[in-house]
Image (cartoon, rainbow, N blue to C red; front, side, top):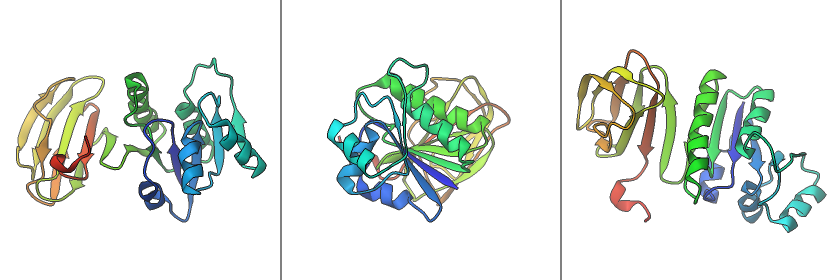
Length: 219
């Protein structure tokens, strides 16, 4: 089962949300993430949060529609996205996609959202942060990614050193490199072939995959 968690950052497009919806998906709106769902006429399965940023008229409308609602105090230890992940865990989700967690004015919330990927790793939930132009995942094992020639991707170490990182099938290959946090060497690489192999011995690796050429991204 797949959970789609819509948070209160930059609203995802309707096209992106509907593309993620599948037969066994569950939509969880985290606070003001419900605003764009209302606009798109997409009904969430759950609505959670402290509701300090949701449009109050929309909240009342969802209440009238008998959407399951879980309200939390404003002063709490977890973000609304963290609370949504707890519901995904209870539902025994195998996959979780966070929409609306990228962009916005709160860099601290973005860093927290990336931390959610680490939480998902520990829960054995396949997870990513996604907007209309990029997907961020956190890897703990070697993998092969697919894309189009010249499509851009970047790699960053997360929480320590990624040992013996090797990249093949890319414009800028790499072999047995120890990647440290903040190292810019692995930024803005490109697919040379349709598949790129990423292998490493240990560590955690953030993968940022751009789905359009950088020149076509909105500024």
